[in-house]
Image 1: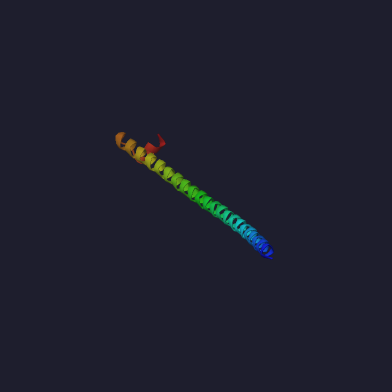
Image 2: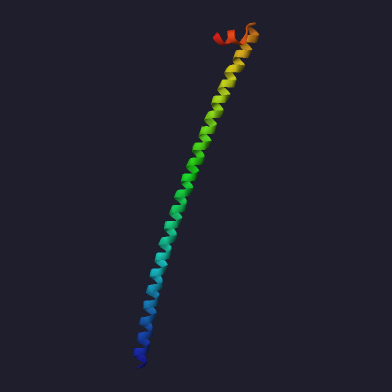
Length: 90
């Protein structure tokens, strides 16, 4: 009788461990899926930030180029005793 009770207790313990292990696997899979979704969202946000920074840098380069052209025209006008409109034509 003791052997039957012992075998039943061991079988019940084995089944409960198997069920717990399956639940743990499911939880681990859900955690991995969630982490992947978070990583994807962060990569998209980083990509948008990089795109915005590139656009701002391009605008700054364009503005610097225009300022350089205007300064060159002003210097040429001063050196050659011309108006800025005459220097811009040269």
